[in-house]
Image (tube, protein in one colour):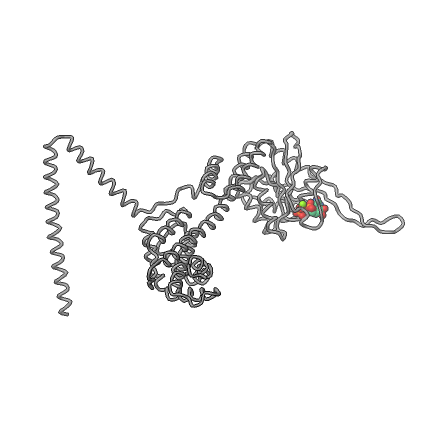
Length: 497
Ligand SMILES: Nc1nc2c(ncn2[C@@H]2O[C@H](COP(=O)(O)OP(=O)(O)OP(=O)(O)O)[C@@H](O)[C@H]2O)c(=O)[nH]1
Ligand SMILES: [Mg+2]
């Protein structure tokens, strides 16, 4: 109780003292300021202006410094574009990526192909649908000379083929036959989806009510802004009543999924195709034969002519945008790959430097310090790679927090390092310095790899979150990294033989 009272009296005295100092300082500062001001207003004008200018300059400089240190810089708006991609925007992104060393070839190829198609000026229709819906048969019905592969067994089309067709109005049309989706090969599905995106109009071919997968594909295509005609093929298999019920259902699906509510966007046709029949001859013997079914695609031709007649310019704009988006996606994929490789390089570099530094130390201590040049440089480079713009304070805080986490893991790291080195034949008794160097490298390797994971997930450096990720994953990373780091240390070690 006595001590408590003593503490309170002491605090009271300190408060009084602080107040006295504050009042004295205020008086002193005010007096000096007024003195200076009096002298300035009575002195030459030029001196007054110069003085005020210097003061303003100092305030601006201090504000800028505080801003840089404390306020988080947000990544540029280019990260989340809301407006549709323009050709200038995609060209700018490609240029920047090229400059950074990203492999932009696949994205460039999309734009090159688009330019060629723009030049040719033809309208591009893509037949899209599940396997065996009758896409190839429809093309055959439109272009009888086309050599399309048609088979009763699903999956007869396994690549992309183009056929030329001239519409009633004389428009040059490129018909694209693509592999059917929902087969066993996901790569073929992706191929078909890409080709659909490159086209002006998609003819979504089905042969009955839509399956769940078909509805999903259609929703996705419509969300891309792709003009779409839903074609019910094989209508010869349905009675007129069945067909009208089916058509109503398809129309409802299309409008549910956001398609244009127009009667000529859903058509029922028979592409014909071929069927295998058993023919009975006059002598009573039987023989297998292949017969062509009659085709009836008149409504489709009318719908297409109407669609191409009215909307040519807007079709071009939509197609161009879809290809820009596709190119942007390919660029994004290339960027992810680039970041993956580059981040590994940065972490490997930092690890190597840490190992070399530890080996050069005259007497290795037991403490492992991750602040300092290597840690800061690695953190900054990784943040830059992932477009995170951390404050210097964040980097420092992250490293300080990670330091305490690493400290707790040191005994484990040293043990793992020692064991890891033993796995290399001919090392003999492992020297303490080498174990220490491997442990040091392992900490950097784990720190870098965990930071990459956080940056990938969050896109920014949040010190506490990143340090937590480091703590959660350090055990796993030192186990998986030990072989590589030990090898690296042995390569650097003069006593490796
Ligand atoms: N009854 C009937 N069968 C049809 C019609 N159109 C196509 N077929 C048959 O449907 C089967 C598949 O036709 P394809 O044209 O190969 O179908 P696809 O959509 O190109 O198939 P994949 O290329 O494998 O995805 C064949 O056996 C055709 O004969 C039609 O209008 N009526
Ligand atoms: Mg086919």
